[in-house]
Length: 260
Length: 361
Image (cartoon, rainbow over all chains, first blue to last red; front, side):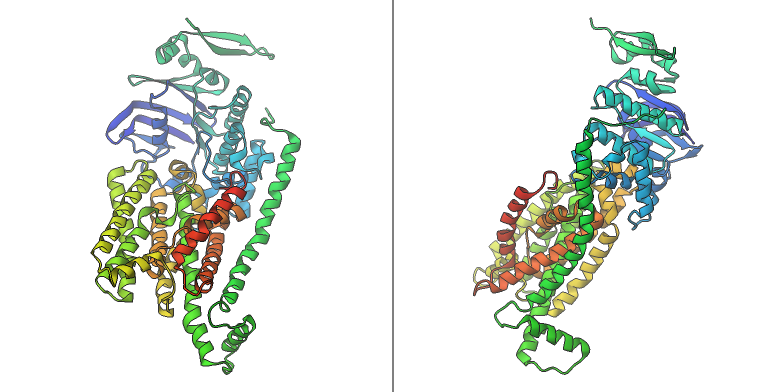
């Protein structure tokens, strides 16, 4: 599966928010979208997911434009993991995860035992089976994020779109979520995620897209995009990129902001 | 690269909660049959309630002989009381209770807000105005009901049109609720205006009394008439109940999960409006039922619409039937149903809030 965005212009009504976006994500790749607040990352996501109409350009799935696709057809290919939030009603975790099956159900159908089974497997994949019967509104933010990823998995998508999957998580949970994302992509999922930490790009992405003000948009490998100059120009702060070596002798790089 | 994800929880506590939750899930399997039996029992017992005393045994005997086609060995009075007076009233109370509760439950999911009741888009106020106009122009009972029903639907259509002009597709749910409030207020002031214009000796009391809500004038033909919109409204809701779960997570998430929110939202609003307008058109403004019954149902069976909607249907029909039984038998003067539902509903809702588990509200 290949998701391709060609010269997209995204925005609300006639107001352009971002222009000239082109990128491509294949199965097994993780694209990390970086950029300062308010630069249009969310608007771009909304356009891929079909919440907003593209003002120009096109989005292709396996070379087929998704413009005319129904919600159900799109949902069977693209899964969406929103930022963890609290819904108004206290659903159990298994109910929330089972909702991911909706795109595979008939108009009037409710999930069958088989759908429930798939949901349980997704919980297992995310190693959170112990949450199954807990109340979604009463679990922690990190757990909720895992549940939402599990829900997207039951959709059985080929591309996963994640809106800041590490937002509001503590240090450990951020890394655990990233580990899971890495694992999912190794199993063949294509992932597009946003993050506010360039370090996360080093930890798990195969590709990085950097959105900057003034419609500067760059895509490339991590080493090409996450550079001291690019970060300085995107975020307006001085950054040093440091390298360390892990236990296996691999080089790990990370960003260190410099405070004046 | 197998990583075990265990996020800030203690094992023992987990298992404990797990067991509790498991029990609760199984509870639903026991509760649903009970929820089916209670309305049936209430239905039978309600025949015994009223000025003219008939025992439950006698009622059962009459029903059985009717069913088997045995000859009637009871008085004509009993026949009239049961079949002309009590049956229509009992059925109407159950239908209206079920209809209002279901549309309330559906709206609470659709608008992602447990504080919403079926009149949020103006259906009740519109129907009230329609009835007031009907009374003002002396339309006759059927005319009043029809005018009420049509104005109820008209008010919601107005809300829908205005909101789509105002909202331009953005934030549709919030804009709908706000427009609904505006339209409701508008129609409430129209009602006041009709009252102001009405003859204070005959029309004004009739309008006021009608607005208080009640089933005292109900006949079997009224029940037959509202049965159509109530079935037309509740069947699609029951069929679409899984989608309501998804909708309660918000428009964008529901979209991403494969629900065509615009289409489903329109269907749900049409159905709920049919239910509310039909109810108000035969029995006036009955407050509270559509707000508290979904809460009560949620406390008993949980928030999953797969069971919540049928449970709201069953509990709502029982609730309004019991309240109507009280209305017609507690005092020598019949209390308008609308007053009684609020009178019972308000403290009952407080009780639910006090007793309710955290998060179940």
